[in-house]
Length: 361
Image 1 (cartoon, helix red, strand yellow):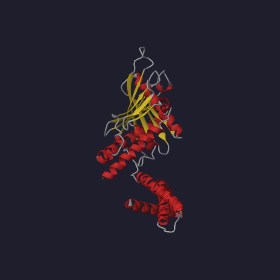
Image 2 (cartoon, rainbow, N blue to C red):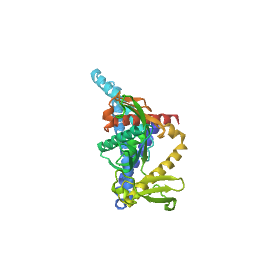
Image 3 (tube, rainbow, N blue to C red):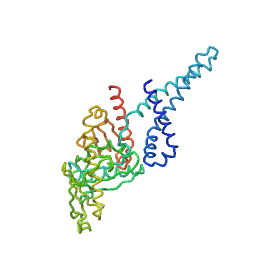
Image 4 (tube, rainbow, N blue to C red):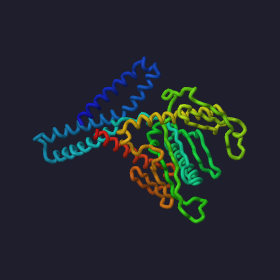
């Protein structure tokens, strides 16, 4: 613990230095520097506050210990001090564990907005309908967090499902909460079209990608082939009348992105570029992570889109997350966006795995 306390003392000093810099008029007038310092201050604040809380408890424990060694203390008062001392020791242990978690390396993408891609897998129309259910679940969850959502591209089915849908979630901490949703989601239920009441199993693939900003991932315009075409909307909508849809092909890898949801070709191109930049950024991150075996070992699941992570069983009203063995029996509430309990459990398991990996290192 001594090493951790030394580290925390250095963090507190750095925190105070940042506060002093933020009062410097030259820093205040330099927006870029001021913004970066405020971001760093925000990240350090919970660590420093928890450390200062621990320091106060430690002082209380030291004071209690001194009183316990006082030969003149009466028996009744000594029992009270002993109880305070025992409670203080227990609190120090709890704060120590909380500080270890706060000191874990922070995912640099945690504060980013995300792009979520949902695709129907095995199961045809039933998979497409469940893709819509998951889209609804995530957008309702985002609404509960006061995050903003916007569809970037969608391929709807005639019966109201999604073959695939790609949407953006803007809000503080969006990636830190949604990143565990990447993988295969399995649904077991009786489809509305099933006449004999048989339970069908379908799958939907979810990918949660941290949104890449232009300054983070630069794309050479000469590496992109741009095609325009008429959007294929249902029922003879206006989108069929003009070549407003955009197809971008990233020539070095052959990655293709299409967007046809907006009437404006310019807006479709803007959205397609956002998706392309984010997918390329994700590929670069994945390549970097593959080189660090310890990081992969210290994650709840690999984030691999082929990994089955969760089952939604309608006959039993059950949701099971296979990565951590969590089973809940309030399926309807979960699908209405109430998924904090699942995400909290995944965050806790991820922290525990990372702590174990740190202790092995």
